[in-house]
Image (tube, rainbow, N blue to C red; front, side, top):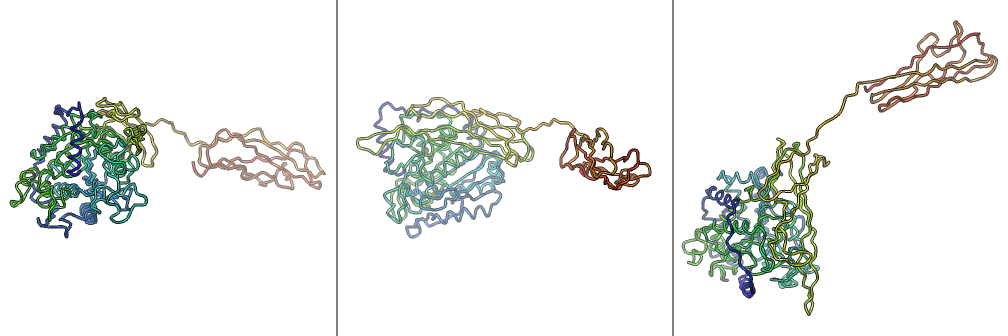
Length: 632
């Protein structure tokens, strides 16, 4: 945010009547545990940026005032991923910026390719593109965690317990153009400097509470709730991961702001833990940051990241306003690009590390000396690993199976102010919200799925309009599915779990029931086949039939009839044999699957010619019926 907009907003807030500033937070055991765990890290103070970046304190506009270009940031992210393949994965957001630029970010964790149910810590920087110090702080924290994990065993151990997702620059077009907004709302996006007075303030574009126009103009709020691709990218990360802590880095108010955004909306239901951790982060800077409050009591806005994230997930969300706090750093000069990109060495590096050169101005030393913002970042990172700050689903399931939790509900915009004179309004708009995240069951079959609570805070923005909070919680449940590696869902459960709770489940546990089938080939013959009387001196064909009842458990079977006696293939009467062969010998039927009690007709034919000599008596033959298989 700019100093000017902060002052103007503060005046608006002060004019409101009957609005209470929240009291100090009550004790929160999970925050206390996080504070103790942070102190136990034993971090070594820094005197330079973690990346080793060194620039002259007199660097000016010819060298971008010491700040990185967007291309340099992307190259450094790629280098970090290449140098640390088991620790860092480079990602590209699914949507390009309004002007068509790719948006890069990284995931950081020990064994980073294992999606094993760890909670997620999400840090994003520079949603306002001209706030370069915020983007630098975000990138340097990536370096900080990677480098420190190689020398500090306790920091390394954190990465067994949490997955970090970090986007140094959300508003990449704004970073390139050195402007607060993107070019959203303009179709097609304008080229060059014509973008300077248009575009969307993306930290007023989130759908929850959007549209009241508090703290934003019609143009700057965007064409619709959550309309900007850059905003949608960040929302996807929150909706598709269990983000238990979110930091959206800005500069330069030297403060920490937490939900809510409008005084009339009231306070969040989890005020004690939200405020408690925000205060703990400020305390971690050795009390260098003392302005800690709900955003509404700094100045009112609508459609910000932190409000949407908290009411969608109940995860902790805060806006660190880095740098600031120094008149020298806030003013423009040959080595300051105003307050948004202040002197890189004295101000931005000083704020991050807590180390200020001896020749820096006194107000810079007072603001940053010994007050490292990095410590606040680590404090929030440690909090993400405290199970009592979120929820845990423990249990057993077959190794390699996929567990997925989902939830669907509506969030709402505020009553939407329309761009008319006189002013007119439309009712709040429902925003269908789908949360979905997954993990893979480890090789030992035991899992711990760290999730945000299924029990969701009742929001102040609803279908009927604004209702001041806090208003308790919705007793909602996660839908948990367990799937085989081929995607087949074999188990579904509903899981209601509140903050600080752990539940234990046995999933996808498949029992067996059955019996064995012995190999069986059974053949039963019906009554003997009889031709009846043959008439001498007459050409005729006689027919005789019987049936065979077949039972086969084999994969294939063949029923055949053979004559294995004397004069095979011919009926005989003592020493006399018919002139023409018996028809119907050979294969009667084949099967390619089991069959049971199947009656198979068996037909024989015998031709008699008028010149064939017939001997008085009975012509007959004993035949062999065979049921066989090659696949028992």
